[in-house]
Length: 532
Ligand SMILES: *[C@@H]1O[C@H](CO)[C@@H](O)[C@H](O)[C@H]1NC(C)=O
Ligand SMILES: *[C@@H]1O[C@H](CO)[C@@H](O)[C@H](O)[C@H]1NC(C)=O
Ligand SMILES: *[C@@H]1O[C@H](CO)[C@@H](O)[C@H](O)[C@H]1NC(C)=O
Ligand SMILES: *[C@@H]1O[C@H](CO)[C@@H](O)[C@H](O)[C@H]1NC(C)=O
Ligand SMILES: *[C@@H]1O[C@H](CO)[C@@H](O)[C@H](O)[C@H]1NC(C)=O
Image 1 (cartoon, rainbow, N blue to C red):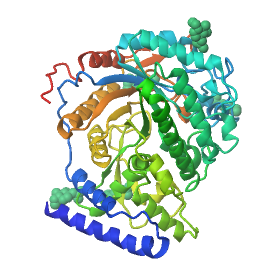
Image 2 (tube, rainbow, N blue to C red):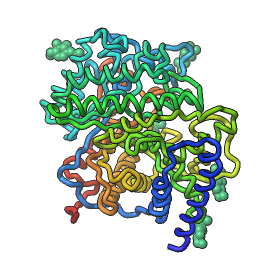
Image 3 (cartoon, helix red, strand yellow):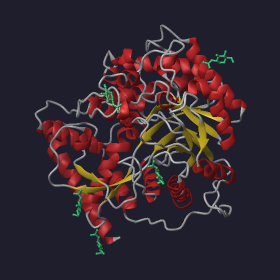
Image 4 (cartoon, rainbow, N blue to C red):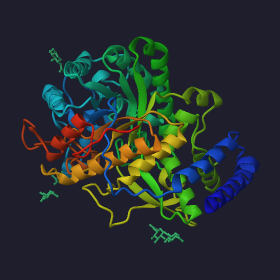
Protein backbone atom coordinates (compact mmCIF):
# COMPACT_ATOMS: atom_id res chain seq x y z
CA UNK A 1 0.00 0.00 0.00
CA UNK A 2 2.95 2.31 0.54
CA UNK A 3 3.39 3.64 -3.02
CA UNK A 4 -0.34 4.04 -3.46
CA UNK A 5 -0.56 6.06 -0.27
CA UNK A 6 2.17 8.33 -1.60
CA UNK A 7 0.24 8.78 -4.81
CA UNK A 8 -2.76 9.95 -2.85
CA UNK A 9 -0.82 12.45 -0.77
CA UNK A 10 0.96 13.85 -3.78
CA UNK A 11 -2.26 14.04 -5.69
CA UNK A 12 -4.15 15.91 -3.02
CA UNK A 13 -1.21 18.32 -2.80
CA UNK A 14 -1.43 19.01 -6.52
CA UNK A 15 -5.14 19.54 -6.34
CA UNK A 16 -4.62 22.06 -3.59
CA UNK A 17 -2.18 23.92 -5.79
CA UNK A 18 -4.69 24.13 -8.62
CA UNK A 19 -7.27 25.34 -6.16
CA UNK A 20 -4.91 27.97 -4.73
CA UNK A 21 -3.81 29.26 -8.08
CA UNK A 22 -6.95 29.30 -10.11
CA UNK A 23 -10.10 28.57 -8.23
CA UNK A 24 -9.68 30.83 -5.23
CA UNK A 25 -7.38 33.61 -6.35
CA UNK A 26 -8.43 34.07 -9.95
CA UNK A 27 -11.57 32.39 -11.13
CA UNK A 28 -13.35 31.82 -7.84
CA UNK A 29 -15.45 28.95 -9.00
CA UNK A 30 -17.70 28.44 -5.98
CA UNK A 31 -18.20 24.76 -6.50
CA UNK A 32 -15.05 23.61 -4.87
CA UNK A 33 -15.75 20.60 -2.78
CA UNK A 34 -13.15 18.72 -0.83
CA UNK A 35 -15.24 15.59 -0.87
CA UNK A 36 -14.91 15.45 -4.61
CA UNK A 37 -11.14 15.54 -4.32
CA UNK A 38 -11.00 12.76 -1.82
CA UNK A 39 -13.44 10.76 -3.88
CA UNK A 40 -11.26 11.26 -6.92
CA UNK A 41 -8.14 10.24 -5.03
CA UNK A 42 -9.85 7.15 -3.70
CA UNK A 43 -10.91 6.15 -7.17
CA UNK A 44 -7.38 6.54 -8.38
CA UNK A 45 -6.22 4.21 -5.65
CA UNK A 46 -8.94 1.60 -5.88
CA UNK A 47 -9.23 1.36 -9.60
CA UNK A 48 -5.76 1.68 -10.86
CA UNK A 49 -3.97 -0.39 -8.28
CA UNK A 50 -4.42 -3.75 -9.90
CA UNK A 51 -3.85 -5.14 -13.34
CA UNK A 52 -6.46 -7.55 -14.61
CA UNK A 53 -5.64 -10.28 -17.03
CA UNK A 54 -8.25 -12.64 -18.35
CA UNK A 55 -6.80 -15.78 -19.78
CA UNK A 56 -9.67 -17.91 -18.51
CA UNK A 57 -13.22 -17.58 -19.79
CA UNK A 58 -15.86 -17.23 -17.11
CA UNK A 59 -18.00 -20.38 -17.05
CA UNK A 60 -20.73 -19.21 -14.73
CA UNK A 61 -24.30 -18.65 -15.85
CA UNK A 62 -25.72 -15.15 -15.86
CA UNK A 63 -28.53 -14.61 -13.34
CA UNK A 64 -32.03 -15.68 -14.41
CA UNK A 65 -33.27 -12.10 -14.59
CA UNK A 66 -30.31 -10.89 -16.68
CA UNK A 67 -31.54 -9.54 -20.02
CA UNK A 68 -29.95 -10.20 -23.41
CA UNK A 69 -30.76 -8.06 -26.40
CA UNK A 70 -29.62 -6.61 -29.70
CA UNK A 71 -29.69 -3.03 -30.96
CA UNK A 72 -30.19 -0.92 -34.06
CA UNK A 73 -30.94 2.77 -34.70
CA UNK A 74 -33.54 4.42 -36.91
CA UNK A 75 -31.31 6.10 -39.49
CA UNK A 76 -29.00 3.09 -39.70
CA UNK A 77 -31.72 0.55 -40.58
CA UNK A 78 -35.11 2.06 -41.45
CA UNK A 79 -34.67 3.61 -44.89
CA UNK A 80 -37.94 5.13 -46.19
CA UNK A 81 -36.27 8.45 -45.63
CA UNK A 82 -39.04 10.51 -47.25
CA UNK A 83 -42.10 8.28 -46.85
CA UNK A 84 -45.40 8.71 -45.02
CA UNK A 85 -44.79 12.33 -44.09
CA UNK A 86 -41.34 11.98 -42.51
CA UNK A 87 -39.34 15.24 -42.34
CA UNK A 88 -35.71 15.72 -43.30
CA UNK A 89 -33.10 14.90 -40.65
CA UNK A 90 -29.52 16.12 -40.36
CA UNK A 91 -28.32 12.71 -41.57
CA UNK A 92 -30.55 12.95 -44.66
CA UNK A 93 -28.97 16.34 -45.31
CA UNK A 94 -25.39 15.15 -44.82
CA UNK A 95 -25.87 12.05 -46.98
CA UNK A 96 -27.42 14.07 -49.80
CA UNK A 97 -24.62 16.64 -49.85
CA UNK A 98 -22.56 16.72 -53.04
CA UNK A 99 -19.72 15.86 -52.92
CA UNK A 100 -20.66 13.33 -50.27
CA UNK A 101 -18.66 13.09 -47.06
CA UNK A 102 -19.71 9.41 -46.74
CA UNK A 103 -17.51 6.49 -47.83
CA UNK A 104 -18.58 5.35 -51.33
CA UNK A 105 -21.30 8.04 -51.39
CA UNK A 106 -23.46 5.67 -49.34
CA UNK A 107 -26.74 6.91 -47.83
CA UNK A 108 -29.38 5.62 -45.42
CA UNK A 109 -32.16 6.29 -47.95
CA UNK A 110 -33.03 2.59 -48.02
CA UNK A 111 -30.54 1.09 -45.55
CA UNK A 112 -31.95 -2.28 -44.34
CA UNK A 113 -35.47 -1.17 -45.30
CA UNK A 114 -36.67 -2.01 -41.80
CA UNK A 115 -39.49 0.50 -42.16
CA UNK A 116 -41.12 -1.98 -44.52
CA UNK A 117 -39.60 -5.17 -43.14
CA UNK A 118 -40.18 -4.75 -39.41
CA UNK A 119 -42.29 -7.90 -39.16
CA UNK A 120 -39.52 -9.93 -40.72
CA UNK A 121 -37.04 -8.32 -38.33
CA UNK A 122 -39.15 -9.19 -35.32
CA UNK A 123 -39.41 -12.78 -36.57
CA UNK A 124 -35.61 -12.92 -36.65
CA UNK A 125 -35.44 -11.47 -33.14
CA UNK A 126 -37.89 -14.09 -31.96
CA UNK A 127 -35.74 -16.76 -33.52
CA UNK A 128 -32.66 -15.35 -31.77
CA UNK A 129 -34.62 -15.60 -28.56
CA UNK A 130 -33.56 -12.20 -27.21
CA UNK A 131 -35.27 -10.72 -24.18
CA UNK A 132 -35.27 -7.20 -25.61
CA UNK A 133 -34.78 -5.19 -28.79
CA UNK A 134 -33.18 -1.76 -28.53
CA UNK A 135 -34.26 0.48 -31.43
CA UNK A 136 -34.56 4.22 -31.83
CA UNK A 137 -37.34 6.55 -32.87
CA UNK A 138 -36.80 9.06 -35.66
CA UNK A 139 -37.92 12.45 -34.34
CA UNK A 140 -38.66 13.45 -37.96
CA UNK A 141 -41.22 10.66 -38.40
CA UNK A 142 -43.17 11.85 -35.36
CA UNK A 143 -42.67 15.63 -35.76
CA UNK A 144 -41.67 16.39 -39.38
CA UNK A 145 -41.04 20.06 -38.56
CA UNK A 146 -39.30 19.26 -35.28
CA UNK A 147 -42.04 21.07 -33.36
CA UNK A 148 -45.22 19.67 -31.86
CA UNK A 149 -47.52 21.74 -34.06
CA UNK A 150 -47.68 18.89 -36.56
CA UNK A 151 -47.84 15.31 -35.30
CA UNK A 152 -47.46 12.73 -38.07
CA UNK A 153 -49.80 9.87 -37.28
CA UNK A 154 -48.27 7.52 -39.87
CA UNK A 155 -44.88 7.87 -38.22
CA UNK A 156 -46.35 7.13 -34.80
CA UNK A 157 -48.17 4.13 -36.25
CA UNK A 158 -44.92 2.63 -37.45
CA UNK A 159 -43.53 2.55 -33.92
CA UNK A 160 -46.86 1.39 -32.51
CA UNK A 161 -46.84 -1.44 -35.02
CA UNK A 162 -43.27 -2.33 -34.19
CA UNK A 163 -43.75 -2.35 -30.42
CA UNK A 164 -46.97 -4.33 -30.80
CA UNK A 165 -45.20 -6.92 -32.92
CA UNK A 166 -42.38 -7.14 -30.37
CA UNK A 167 -44.79 -7.58 -27.47
CA UNK A 168 -46.71 -10.22 -29.40
CA UNK A 169 -43.44 -12.14 -29.62
CA UNK A 170 -42.53 -11.66 -25.97
CA UNK A 171 -39.74 -9.20 -26.72
CA UNK A 172 -39.30 -6.12 -24.53
CA UNK A 173 -38.87 -2.86 -26.47
CA UNK A 174 -35.99 -0.69 -25.22
CA UNK A 175 -36.41 2.64 -26.95
CA UNK A 176 -33.74 5.23 -27.70
CA UNK A 177 -35.53 8.55 -28.07
CA UNK A 178 -32.67 10.25 -29.90
CA UNK A 179 -30.07 8.37 -31.90
CA UNK A 180 -28.57 11.30 -33.82
CA UNK A 181 -31.22 12.05 -36.49
CA UNK A 182 -32.19 15.58 -35.47
CA UNK A 183 -34.83 17.35 -37.58
CA UNK A 184 -32.97 19.56 -40.06
CA UNK A 185 -35.46 22.34 -39.26
CA UNK A 186 -34.11 22.46 -35.71
CA UNK A 187 -30.52 22.38 -36.95
CA UNK A 188 -31.39 25.41 -39.10
CA UNK A 189 -31.96 27.19 -35.77
CA UNK A 190 -28.62 26.04 -34.36
CA UNK A 191 -29.56 22.51 -33.31
CA UNK A 192 -28.07 21.43 -30.00
CA UNK A 193 -26.21 24.72 -29.72
CA UNK A 194 -29.47 26.65 -29.30
CA UNK A 195 -31.12 26.39 -25.90
CA UNK A 196 -34.48 26.44 -27.66
CA UNK A 197 -33.96 22.75 -28.30
CA UNK A 198 -34.41 21.86 -24.65
CA UNK A 199 -38.13 22.61 -24.80
CA UNK A 200 -38.51 21.09 -28.26
CA UNK A 201 -36.97 17.85 -27.03
CA UNK A 202 -39.18 17.70 -23.96
CA UNK A 203 -42.27 18.34 -26.14
CA UNK A 204 -41.15 15.43 -28.33
CA UNK A 205 -40.57 13.27 -25.26
CA UNK A 206 -44.09 14.01 -24.01
CA UNK A 207 -45.56 12.68 -27.24
CA UNK A 208 -43.49 9.49 -27.04
CA UNK A 209 -44.39 8.84 -23.40
CA UNK A 210 -48.08 9.48 -23.91
CA UNK A 211 -48.42 7.63 -27.23
CA UNK A 212 -46.09 4.69 -26.62
CA UNK A 213 -45.64 4.55 -22.86
CA UNK A 214 -48.25 1.84 -22.36
CA UNK A 215 -46.06 -0.67 -24.15
CA UNK A 216 -42.56 0.81 -23.70
CA UNK A 217 -41.07 0.41 -20.22
CA UNK A 218 -37.42 1.18 -20.91
CA UNK A 219 -36.47 4.54 -22.37
CA UNK A 220 -33.04 5.95 -23.25
CA UNK A 221 -33.15 9.70 -23.70
CA UNK A 222 -29.97 9.83 -25.79
CA UNK A 223 -27.50 7.61 -27.52
CA UNK A 224 -23.86 8.57 -27.11
CA UNK A 225 -24.15 12.22 -26.23
CA UNK A 226 -20.40 12.52 -26.66
CA UNK A 227 -20.70 11.67 -30.35
CA UNK A 228 -23.68 14.00 -30.75
CA UNK A 229 -21.74 16.91 -29.28
CA UNK A 230 -18.04 16.40 -29.94
CA UNK A 231 -18.70 14.59 -33.23
CA UNK A 232 -21.49 16.91 -34.38
CA UNK A 233 -20.38 20.33 -33.15
CA UNK A 234 -16.70 19.97 -32.20
CA UNK A 235 -14.69 17.94 -34.70
CA UNK A 236 -17.20 17.50 -37.56
CA UNK A 237 -17.21 13.70 -37.56
CA UNK A 238 -20.98 13.30 -37.25
CA UNK A 239 -23.94 15.28 -38.63
CA UNK A 240 -24.34 18.23 -38.79
CA UNK A 241 -20.55 18.22 -39.38
CA UNK A 242 -19.94 21.51 -37.60
CA UNK A 243 -16.36 22.24 -36.66
CA UNK A 244 -16.33 24.50 -33.62
CA UNK A 245 -13.94 22.75 -31.24
CA UNK A 246 -13.68 23.95 -27.67
CA UNK A 247 -16.96 25.86 -27.82
CA UNK A 248 -19.59 24.07 -29.88
CA UNK A 249 -19.37 20.65 -28.19
CA UNK A 250 -19.68 22.17 -24.71
CA UNK A 251 -22.70 24.28 -25.67
CA UNK A 252 -24.29 21.18 -27.18
CA UNK A 253 -23.65 19.10 -24.08
CA UNK A 254 -25.03 21.82 -21.82
CA UNK A 255 -28.34 21.88 -23.68
CA UNK A 256 -28.44 18.13 -24.14
CA UNK A 257 -28.05 17.55 -20.39
CA UNK A 258 -30.91 19.95 -19.68
CA UNK A 259 -33.05 18.21 -22.29
CA UNK A 260 -32.25 14.84 -20.73
CA UNK A 261 -33.14 16.10 -17.27
CA UNK A 262 -36.34 17.70 -18.58
CA UNK A 263 -37.48 14.43 -20.16
CA UNK A 264 -36.64 12.38 -17.05
CA UNK A 265 -38.47 14.81 -14.78
CA UNK A 266 -41.47 14.87 -17.10
CA UNK A 267 -41.66 11.09 -16.94
CA UNK A 268 -41.13 11.08 -13.22
CA UNK A 269 -43.81 13.65 -12.52
CA UNK A 270 -46.49 12.77 -15.06
CA UNK A 271 -46.04 9.25 -16.40
CA UNK A 272 -44.15 7.05 -13.97
CA UNK A 273 -47.07 6.38 -11.66
CA UNK A 274 -49.26 4.91 -14.41
CA UNK A 275 -46.67 3.49 -16.74
CA UNK A 276 -44.10 2.19 -14.25
CA UNK A 277 -41.22 2.36 -16.69
CA UNK A 278 -37.59 3.39 -16.38
CA UNK A 279 -35.67 6.19 -18.05
CA UNK A 280 -31.91 6.16 -18.55
CA UNK A 281 -29.29 7.40 -21.00
CA UNK A 282 -26.68 5.59 -23.11
CA UNK A 283 -23.24 7.14 -22.62
CA UNK A 284 -20.27 5.88 -24.60
CA UNK A 285 -16.74 5.48 -23.44
CA UNK A 286 -13.64 3.40 -23.89
CA UNK A 287 -11.68 2.22 -20.89
CA UNK A 288 -8.62 4.44 -20.40
CA UNK A 289 -5.70 2.50 -19.03
CA UNK A 290 -2.66 4.33 -17.61
CA UNK A 291 0.37 3.52 -19.71
CA UNK A 292 2.35 2.76 -16.58
CA UNK A 293 1.19 1.99 -13.08
CA UNK A 294 4.62 3.13 -11.93
CA UNK A 295 3.78 6.65 -12.98
CA UNK A 296 1.50 8.73 -10.77
CA UNK A 297 1.12 11.13 -13.65
CA UNK A 298 -0.12 8.42 -16.02
CA UNK A 299 -2.59 7.14 -13.43
CA UNK A 300 -3.99 10.63 -12.90
CA UNK A 301 -4.06 11.32 -16.62
CA UNK A 302 -6.10 8.18 -17.23
CA UNK A 303 -8.61 9.19 -14.55
CA UNK A 304 -8.80 12.66 -16.05
CA UNK A 305 -9.55 11.22 -19.47
CA UNK A 306 -12.25 8.95 -18.05
CA UNK A 307 -13.86 11.97 -16.37
CA UNK A 308 -13.75 13.92 -19.64
CA UNK A 309 -15.33 10.98 -21.40
CA UNK A 310 -18.06 9.19 -19.41
CA UNK A 311 -17.97 11.81 -16.65
CA UNK A 312 -18.81 14.70 -18.99
CA UNK A 313 -22.43 13.43 -19.01
CA UNK A 314 -22.68 11.05 -16.08
CA UNK A 315 -21.23 13.37 -13.46
CA UNK A 316 -23.93 16.05 -13.92
CA UNK A 317 -26.65 13.41 -14.00
CA UNK A 318 -25.42 11.56 -10.91
CA UNK A 319 -23.58 14.20 -8.89
CA UNK A 320 -25.09 17.41 -10.29
CA UNK A 321 -22.29 19.11 -12.23
CA UNK A 322 -19.40 18.57 -14.63
CA UNK A 323 -16.44 16.68 -13.16
CA UNK A 324 -14.32 19.12 -11.20
CA UNK A 325 -11.26 18.18 -13.26
CA UNK A 326 -13.06 19.31 -16.43
CA UNK A 327 -14.11 22.54 -14.75
CA UNK A 328 -10.55 23.16 -13.55
CA UNK A 329 -8.68 22.30 -16.73
CA UNK A 330 -11.00 24.13 -19.10
CA UNK A 331 -11.12 27.19 -16.83
CA UNK A 332 -7.34 27.35 -16.66
CA UNK A 333 -6.87 26.89 -20.39
CA UNK A 334 -9.61 29.40 -21.19
CA UNK A 335 -7.90 31.95 -19.02
CA UNK A 336 -4.56 31.29 -20.69
CA UNK A 337 -6.25 31.70 -24.09
CA UNK A 338 -7.52 35.12 -23.06
CA UNK A 339 -11.18 34.30 -22.58
CA UNK A 340 -12.98 36.28 -19.91
CA UNK A 341 -14.63 33.11 -18.63
CA UNK A 342 -14.41 29.38 -19.07
CA UNK A 343 -15.33 27.87 -22.42
CA UNK A 344 -17.20 25.24 -20.36
CA UNK A 345 -20.62 26.75 -19.59
CA UNK A 346 -21.70 26.82 -15.95
CA UNK A 347 -24.88 25.40 -14.53
CA UNK A 348 -26.75 27.56 -12.03
CA UNK A 349 -27.37 26.09 -8.59
CA UNK A 350 -30.98 25.53 -9.62
CA UNK A 351 -29.93 23.69 -12.75
CA UNK A 352 -27.55 21.52 -10.77
CA UNK A 353 -30.42 20.48 -8.50
CA UNK A 354 -32.66 19.92 -11.51
CA UNK A 355 -30.19 17.68 -13.34
CA UNK A 356 -28.88 15.73 -10.37
CA UNK A 357 -30.40 12.29 -9.96
CA UNK A 358 -32.23 12.16 -13.29
CA UNK A 359 -31.64 8.47 -14.08
CA UNK A 360 -33.18 5.14 -13.23
CA UNK A 361 -30.23 3.26 -14.69
CA UNK A 362 -27.08 4.14 -16.63
CA UNK A 363 -26.44 2.84 -20.15
CA UNK A 364 -22.92 2.02 -21.28
CA UNK A 365 -21.83 1.77 -24.90
CA UNK A 366 -18.31 0.41 -24.92
CA UNK A 367 -16.16 -1.22 -27.55
CA UNK A 368 -12.50 -0.69 -26.84
CA UNK A 369 -9.65 0.56 -24.64
CA UNK A 370 -6.90 3.15 -25.07
CA UNK A 371 -3.68 3.74 -23.22
CA UNK A 372 -3.12 7.11 -21.60
CA UNK A 373 0.23 8.83 -21.17
CA UNK A 374 0.62 11.95 -19.10
CA UNK A 375 2.33 14.80 -20.93
CA UNK A 376 4.28 17.91 -19.92
CA UNK A 377 3.65 19.41 -23.28
CA UNK A 378 -0.12 19.38 -23.90
CA UNK A 379 -1.54 20.27 -27.30
CA UNK A 380 -2.60 23.93 -26.93
CA UNK A 381 -5.36 23.84 -29.56
CA UNK A 382 -8.94 24.30 -28.41
CA UNK A 383 -11.16 21.25 -28.23
CA UNK A 384 -12.66 18.70 -25.91
CA UNK A 385 -9.97 16.09 -26.64
CA UNK A 386 -7.11 18.57 -26.15
CA UNK A 387 -8.60 20.07 -23.00
CA UNK A 388 -7.95 16.82 -21.11
CA UNK A 389 -4.20 17.36 -21.66
CA UNK A 390 -3.33 13.69 -22.03
CA UNK A 391 -2.02 11.48 -24.80
CA UNK A 392 -4.40 8.73 -25.90
CA UNK A 393 -3.14 5.88 -28.04
CA UNK A 394 -3.48 2.22 -28.95
CA UNK A 395 -0.47 0.02 -29.66
CA UNK A 396 -0.35 -1.29 -33.25
CA UNK A 397 0.10 -4.82 -32.00
CA UNK A 398 -3.31 -4.89 -30.30
CA UNK A 399 -5.85 -7.05 -32.15
CA UNK A 400 -7.80 -4.92 -34.63
CA UNK A 401 -11.14 -4.91 -36.47
CA UNK A 402 -12.51 -3.18 -39.57
CA UNK A 403 -12.79 0.09 -37.62
CA UNK A 404 -9.52 1.89 -36.92
CA UNK A 405 -10.60 2.85 -33.39
CA UNK A 406 -11.88 -0.57 -32.40
CA UNK A 407 -9.08 -2.65 -30.88
CA UNK A 408 -10.07 -5.83 -29.11
CA UNK A 409 -9.23 -5.45 -25.39
CA UNK A 410 -11.66 -7.61 -23.39
CA UNK A 411 -10.27 -6.80 -19.93
CA UNK A 412 -11.29 -3.16 -20.51
CA UNK A 413 -14.91 -4.24 -20.01
CA UNK A 414 -14.34 -5.32 -16.43
CA UNK A 415 -12.30 -2.24 -15.62
CA UNK A 416 -14.80 0.28 -16.98
CA UNK A 417 -17.64 -1.46 -15.15
CA UNK A 418 -15.73 -1.42 -11.89
CA UNK A 419 -14.98 2.27 -12.43
CA UNK A 420 -18.67 3.04 -13.01
CA UNK A 421 -19.58 1.23 -9.82
CA UNK A 422 -17.07 3.16 -7.73
CA UNK A 423 -17.64 6.54 -9.36
CA UNK A 424 -21.44 6.61 -9.45
CA UNK A 425 -22.50 4.92 -6.19
CA UNK A 426 -23.08 1.45 -7.57
CA UNK A 427 -25.71 2.32 -10.19
CA UNK A 428 -27.86 -0.15 -12.09
CA UNK A 429 -26.13 -0.53 -15.45
CA UNK A 430 -27.37 -1.68 -18.83
CA UNK A 431 -24.73 -2.46 -21.45
CA UNK A 432 -26.51 -0.68 -24.27
CA UNK A 433 -23.87 -1.43 -26.94
CA UNK A 434 -20.85 -3.64 -27.44
CA UNK A 435 -19.68 -5.24 -30.66
CA UNK A 436 -17.12 -5.86 -33.37
CA UNK A 437 -16.77 -4.75 -37.00
CA UNK A 438 -15.52 -6.81 -39.92
CA UNK A 439 -15.99 -7.09 -43.69
CA UNK A 440 -19.42 -8.77 -43.43
CA UNK A 441 -18.30 -12.37 -43.78
CA UNK A 442 -20.78 -15.06 -42.68
CA UNK A 443 -17.95 -17.03 -41.08
CA UNK A 444 -17.39 -14.35 -38.45
CA UNK A 445 -15.34 -16.29 -35.91
CA UNK A 446 -13.55 -13.15 -34.81
CA UNK A 447 -16.86 -11.56 -33.84
CA UNK A 448 -17.74 -14.63 -31.80
CA UNK A 449 -14.37 -14.48 -30.09
CA UNK A 450 -14.85 -10.78 -29.33
CA UNK A 451 -18.32 -11.29 -27.85
CA UNK A 452 -17.24 -14.30 -25.87
CA UNK A 453 -14.27 -12.59 -24.25
CA UNK A 454 -16.07 -9.29 -23.60
CA UNK A 455 -19.07 -11.02 -22.07
CA UNK A 456 -16.80 -13.17 -19.94
CA UNK A 457 -15.12 -10.02 -18.67
CA UNK A 458 -18.55 -8.52 -17.97
CA UNK A 459 -19.51 -11.65 -16.03
CA UNK A 460 -16.30 -11.30 -14.02
CA UNK A 461 -17.19 -7.71 -13.16
CA UNK A 462 -20.56 -8.81 -11.84
CA UNK A 463 -19.22 -11.77 -9.93
CA UNK A 464 -15.87 -10.57 -8.65
CA UNK A 465 -16.47 -6.84 -8.31
CA UNK A 466 -20.20 -6.87 -7.55
CA UNK A 467 -21.13 -4.53 -10.39
CA UNK A 468 -24.91 -4.29 -10.83
CA UNK A 469 -25.44 -5.05 -14.52
CA UNK A 470 -29.04 -5.72 -15.56
CA UNK A 471 -28.48 -6.68 -19.19
CA UNK A 472 -26.32 -6.81 -22.27
CA UNK A 473 -27.10 -5.53 -25.74
CA UNK A 474 -25.10 -6.59 -28.77
CA UNK A 475 -24.44 -3.99 -31.46
CA UNK A 476 -25.82 -4.77 -33.88
CA UNK A 477 -28.70 -7.00 -34.81
CA UNK A 478 -27.75 -6.64 -38.48
CA UNK A 479 -25.26 -4.98 -40.81
CA UNK A 480 -26.31 -1.38 -41.36
CA UNK A 481 -25.35 2.18 -42.28
CA UNK A 482 -22.28 3.00 -40.20
CA UNK A 483 -22.37 6.83 -40.40
CA UNK A 484 -19.45 8.40 -42.27
CA UNK A 485 -18.10 4.90 -43.00
CA UNK A 486 -21.28 4.05 -44.95
CA UNK A 487 -21.64 0.30 -45.44
CA UNK A 488 -17.89 -0.36 -45.28
CA UNK A 489 -17.84 -1.47 -41.63
CA UNK A 490 -20.16 -4.32 -40.67
CA UNK A 491 -21.29 -4.95 -37.08
CA UNK A 492 -24.25 -7.30 -37.63
CA UNK A 493 -25.16 -10.71 -36.26
CA UNK A 494 -27.23 -10.91 -39.45
CA UNK A 495 -25.79 -10.22 -42.87
CA UNK A 496 -27.85 -7.90 -45.08
CA UNK A 497 -27.54 -8.04 -48.86
CA UNK A 498 -27.36 -4.35 -49.74
CA UNK A 499 -27.15 -5.17 -53.46
CA UNK A 500 -30.55 -6.78 -53.46
CA UNK A 501 -33.78 -4.76 -53.48
CA UNK A 502 -35.16 -7.22 -50.92
CA UNK A 503 -32.28 -6.65 -48.52
CA UNK A 504 -32.27 -10.34 -47.56
CA UNK A 505 -31.06 -11.08 -44.05
CA UNK A 506 -28.88 -14.14 -43.39
CA UNK A 507 -27.74 -15.26 -39.96
CA UNK A 508 -23.98 -15.24 -39.52
CA UNK A 509 -22.16 -17.79 -37.42
CA UNK A 510 -22.24 -15.24 -34.58
CA UNK A 511 -26.06 -15.11 -34.63
CA UNK A 512 -26.18 -18.85 -34.07
CA UNK A 513 -23.60 -18.52 -31.30
CA UNK A 514 -25.43 -15.63 -29.62
CA UNK A 515 -28.72 -17.52 -29.75
CA UNK A 516 -27.10 -20.22 -27.64
CA UNK A 517 -25.77 -17.68 -25.16
CA UNK A 518 -29.22 -16.18 -24.75
CA UNK A 519 -30.70 -19.63 -24.28
CA UNK A 520 -28.12 -20.96 -21.82
CA UNK A 521 -27.14 -17.61 -20.21
CA UNK A 522 -23.61 -18.82 -20.55
CA UNK A 523 -20.69 -17.87 -22.83
CA UNK A 524 -18.91 -21.25 -22.92
CA UNK A 525 -20.06 -24.76 -23.78
CA UNK A 526 -20.07 -26.04 -20.22
CA UNK A 527 -21.51 -23.73 -17.66
CA UNK A 528 -21.95 -24.12 -13.96
CA UNK A 529 -24.51 -22.22 -11.93
CA UNK A 530 -23.22 -19.10 -10.29
CA UNK A 531 -22.41 -19.39 -6.63
CA UNK A 532 -23.36 -15.76 -6.04
C1 LIG B 1 -19.28 9.87 -55.47
O1 LIG B 1 -19.94 10.90 -56.14
C2 LIG B 1 -19.09 11.76 -56.87
C3 LIG B 1 -19.93 12.87 -57.44
O2 LIG B 1 -20.37 13.68 -56.39
C4 LIG B 1 -18.39 10.98 -57.96
O3 LIG B 1 -17.49 11.82 -58.63
C5 LIG B 1 -17.62 9.83 -57.30
O4 LIG B 1 -17.07 9.01 -58.33
C6 LIG B 1 -18.55 8.99 -56.46
N1 LIG B 1 -17.76 8.00 -55.75
C7 LIG B 1 -18.11 6.72 -55.69
C8 LIG B 1 -17.19 5.81 -54.95
O5 LIG B 1 -19.11 6.30 -56.23
C1 LIG C 1 -49.16 -0.23 -39.17
O1 LIG C 1 -50.13 -1.27 -39.15
C2 LIG C 1 -51.35 -0.93 -39.78
C3 LIG C 1 -52.34 -2.04 -39.50
O2 LIG C 1 -51.77 -3.29 -39.80
C4 LIG C 1 -51.09 -0.72 -41.25
O3 LIG C 1 -52.29 -0.35 -41.90
C5 LIG C 1 -50.07 0.40 -41.41
O4 LIG C 1 -49.71 0.51 -42.77
C6 LIG C 1 -48.84 0.13 -40.60
N1 LIG C 1 -48.02 1.33 -40.69
C7 LIG C 1 -46.72 1.33 -40.80
C8 LIG C 1 -46.06 2.62 -40.99
O5 LIG C 1 -46.07 0.30 -40.76
C1 LIG D 1 7.01 -0.89 -13.18
O1 LIG D 1 7.81 -1.30 -12.10
C2 LIG D 1 7.98 -2.70 -12.02
C3 LIG D 1 8.68 -3.02 -10.74
O2 LIG D 1 9.71 -2.12 -10.49
C4 LIG D 1 8.74 -3.18 -13.27
O3 LIG D 1 8.92 -4.58 -13.22
C5 LIG D 1 7.93 -2.82 -14.49
O4 LIG D 1 8.61 -3.15 -15.67
C6 LIG D 1 7.61 -1.33 -14.51
N1 LIG D 1 6.67 -1.08 -15.59
C7 LIG D 1 6.80 -0.07 -16.44
C8 LIG D 1 5.78 0.02 -17.52
O5 LIG D 1 7.67 0.77 -16.35
C1 LIG E 1 3.81 6.66 -23.82
O1 LIG E 1 4.93 6.54 -22.96
C2 LIG E 1 5.79 5.46 -23.27
C3 LIG E 1 6.87 5.42 -22.19
O2 LIG E 1 7.47 6.64 -22.07
C4 LIG E 1 6.38 5.62 -24.66
O3 LIG E 1 7.16 4.49 -24.98
C5 LIG E 1 5.25 5.74 -25.65
O4 LIG E 1 5.75 5.99 -26.94
C6 LIG E 1 4.31 6.88 -25.25
N1 LIG E 1 3.21 6.90 -26.20
C7 LIG E 1 2.95 7.99 -26.94
C8 LIG E 1 1.83 7.86 -27.91
O5 LIG E 1 3.55 9.03 -26.81
C1 LIG F 1 -13.42 -11.07 -44.95
O1 LIG F 1 -12.86 -11.55 -43.76
C2 LIG F 1 -12.73 -12.98 -43.74
C3 LIG F 1 -12.34 -13.40 -42.33
O2 LIG F 1 -11.37 -12.57 -41.79
C4 LIG F 1 -11.75 -13.40 -44.81
O3 LIG F 1 -11.59 -14.81 -44.80
C5 LIG F 1 -12.30 -12.96 -46.14
O4 LIG F 1 -11.37 -13.25 -47.16
C6 LIG F 1 -12.60 -11.47 -46.16
N1 LIG F 1 -13.33 -11.17 -47.37
C7 LIG F 1 -13.05 -10.11 -48.13
C8 LIG F 1 -13.92 -9.91 -49.32
O5 LIG F 1 -12.13 -9.35 -47.87
